[in-house]
Length: 119
Length: 108
Image (cartoon, rainbow over all chains, first blue to last red; front, side, top):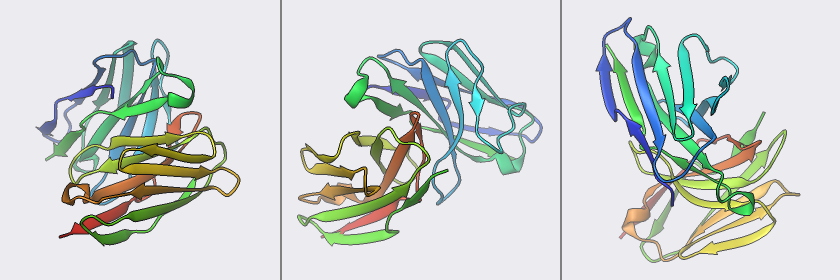
């Protein structure tokens, strides 16, 4: 299957700082990427849909000014957690939609995730 | 919104077959995904059903009935490495909703 990478895999930061997470589709172009968050022993929760060349669409309850998303190219989306606080500590995972396959084979592939710890 | 229901836990022995059922209620639907997730890792794609019926891929098969809002994932010839959480994820406009997942434990 297609490969999606995330960087960094782990990050520890101080409260009040900002953290940028990159999501890249390595062998396909992804006009749409998705950002999820997963707290321990809970299900993945969709945070936002990232569309190349346009503004991201945020799910209800997700602050767009706190979680800044930029999808500047067909292979890269970034999520910036601004003024991070301990309650933002979580596992952040991106997925990318492989449009080349399309139709019945339309598939979303996940990156390996980024574990954020805010002290 | 989406309501997704699947069993919390299942246990089976190595070499056996396990079927994980999933029922869902969605405001829109354009397919259902199954993912495998090991602890501390991101989900790995297993299958995608958009039409009714059974899709077979090696040891894993997935079934969908859109009229019943029902899907199942069938794992055959279980191996120890299959111990993981299995996530049923219906898609609405290609946005996935995840239930809590089913933790499968494979015993020797």
